[in-house]
Image 1 (cartoon, one colour):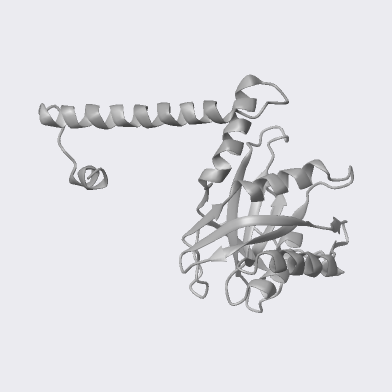
Image 2 (cartoon, rainbow, N blue to C red):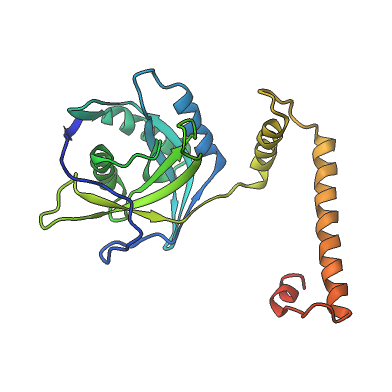
Length: 247
């Protein structure tokens, strides 16, 4: 379904706040969601400059946790943008049956371009997340010269005397990557693959994982011990906050 024609409105990233929007203080993204976005981007057609999809997760009063995502079919031309809304609804119902605790929290796109079409899609997802603002995640793959790979998060605020779907400002929100212990081995494997320069990497055996974990714990204990001894000798001023953490 086409969301609408192009508009002359300009959509920019802004660091300002809008009083009528309850802005999340932090956006947390899990690796599974990022892997889904990257996989979708790798499977795109030659005609697609970017891909989009739905973000699933949970909300608190101050934080949005993005746990997974799924691709949504769409197309963009100079005249209009079209999103397969029926496919979006069907996929969400399937995900919701598997995990009823997750809800639609927003959408993602690859690249860093925020334009009129982004505003129209944002408006569509805002209907699913109301009364909460829809979160928009942009993942820059870094393949464009002069642009660094990275993840950014936004919510939107309407602008203009007469609010329209295509008239909005994207407001940046702090974003961080967080993973559970069960996801750590997969993340470590990707890091090792990047360091080795190889396109493939064998999973680390359980004993090696255990050995590395013990070494990490031992290293942390050494740092704590060195700090305590430095405080006892009077070389470092003790920090009560650090003491409470390690008590």
